[in-house]
Length: 260
Image 1: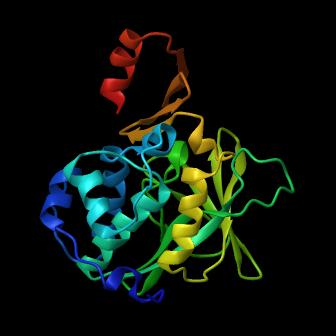
Image 2: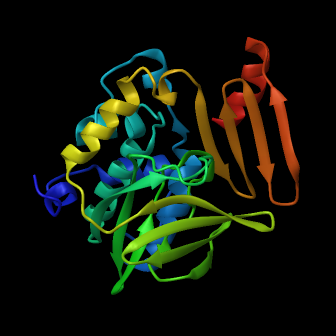
């Protein structure tokens, strides 16, 4: 399968997906539709790593498995699952979609060069290129970003910017009064095998943080939920973060069921 065939060769039950995310708007390949889907998807389909954490392997990336897990079973997933599903939906609606990969900078020391362990999408909408990414955990985009140089762009949540130097793009997020790097990427199209290799490592290698730490995240209107281990945090736009250390099943039920 070539990069161009990654999404074009797949079929998806669009009715089931639209019901899953609660979308009732038009099904046309416009920027308005792209932004509406990008806003709803991560608020409904949470980022989570339960399968690697509990050894439910392999984490499958074929279309049937993705639809069964994220749509029919109403589960969440991580970047490869989330963005492959989203790319399938966009391609079925008539968007031009290309899979890309990124090196993560978030929470990394300066100068550390991480492997290509993250998936994102390039989407053509109304003659322009956009970056879409519904699978970056606690900082998942809630809107597509115009692929331009040195542009600050507001999403329904944080403000981001894309910086380009010699064909290499860096996504930065505005956190408080600072700009922090999220990941770097180029526009080289990826094939399914590229994602399968990274997916296998992240889900199976003993040193992968997805194997030993519970991670879940979901944006909501006005903020974000984030879970790392037993630390549950609620971020809102107009108040300091609310952090809770969960120490019992009762607390997990009280805090996590409404969030995820």
